[in-house]
Length: 50
Image (cartoon, rainbow, N blue to C red):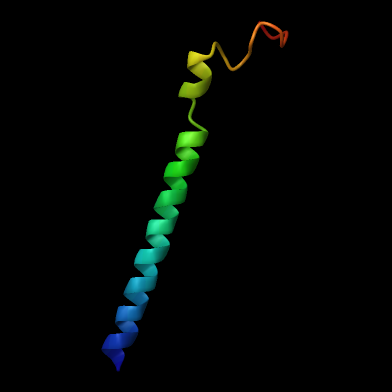
């Protein structure tokens, strides 16, 4: 009986770790600084910050 409880904890931990890693990849991709560097600081010529 103890083996199945440990197995359930391992499976839940792996699922949570995979979900956390997936969220980390999504946030890192969406909020990367490369997007702003290639666009000239994130501003176009009409925004008044250049």
